[in-house]
Length: 527
Image (tube, rainbow, N blue to C red; front, side):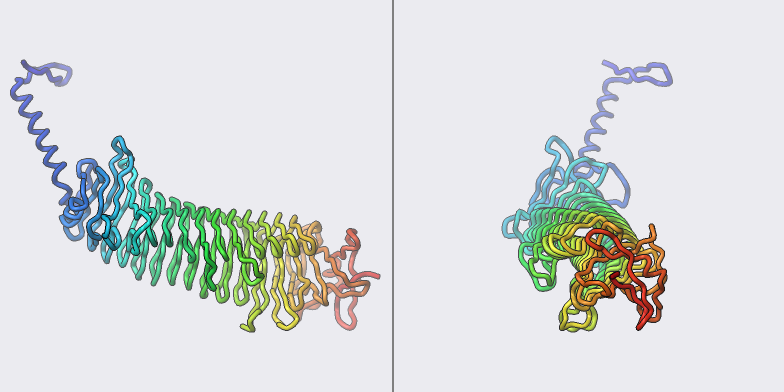
């Protein structure tokens, strides 16, 4: 029998023996490739380089030359017999979809250590787009070591990879030059941090999900390093036990830098700082993204922060965009600013948060322990709107104490506070002793949001006012006629025009204040 093969529109005959010989040679060549994993630094079809056991994978990785690249496809579930270290070479591992779709790596009972350790010059990529299978590293609820440890190398997690159910951290990165880039995939259900970084490492999150981890110091725990979040989600993590300095379930920072340009931190539940907990002189800059639906269950007024908690010496939080919304806490449902820390708002929105007691949007603490600096909220732009406090300070609550001279501070030179709800101070509550509230520029607490002042507190004007609509604030006070509500703060001298931009809430009717220049310039409750 002969075979017919086309050639430029014509047919020609190939002798059967020649055809079968060629077919057999192709078959045995393919088998040779399947049984001999990559040994060269080239790009190729992943399905041609399968591995079916941990021993095969170890041998295949060892065969990659220094500086070379090996890419492998896991064809079946396997168990590790010993941790694998990757140094000075690049390794990529994906899973074969097959009929099962998921390939899982587990520890052999009694095996200790991480699945992979990536050292200096080493690069490990888990998951990818060229094979649709799901690669799972499953700690099965045990293990005292992270699933993947990076010490000087680089780890990349792509779609189609899951790191889950470990007895401790999912990914641990430490040391200058170490990095972890998360483009997709999931890190979930670990009894520890989803990701822990330290000592100058860098974590970049472009996509994927970190969820369902149970840990007291953050699903993402940052320690003297950098985290850039461009996308993805950190959600549904929990911190069940209160700690003196942490108790956060979303992102915990210690002497670190966090830049948020996108993504979502949502549905996390913790003692303090359900979404983000800042410690030890850290810096958090938020450009875009959302921190939403998180909860802090601290019941004392020394903590809270459903969305963001700035802990003692926590550093600075600068908000340039994005939203902090739908978070809950007893105090500071959106943002809690503890003493010695600063929240600077230049854009974005703090909206729809709910405090069980005080500070629906922002809670600013006084200098409780004589550190020399209260909490500070600087507002240059953005909006605090639609927040609720069951007690006082729907938008902003400024805490104070008669025994401590440095009360919570709000410095407002732009932005708006409006549409918030509370018993007293729907917009701003500054009724505590030594609370301090200043206004200038285009700052505006809208007419439907009362600023509550009592006990001699005033709004101090520090510069010329030009609020949208002409009204800077409507003020409510228990003081009678003649009570001073607006003053100038040196070196600025208050003018009658400034006082004309404030109103007194007279039983629900906004009434102009009275300007006087003796003994000093002030605006007071009319007769």
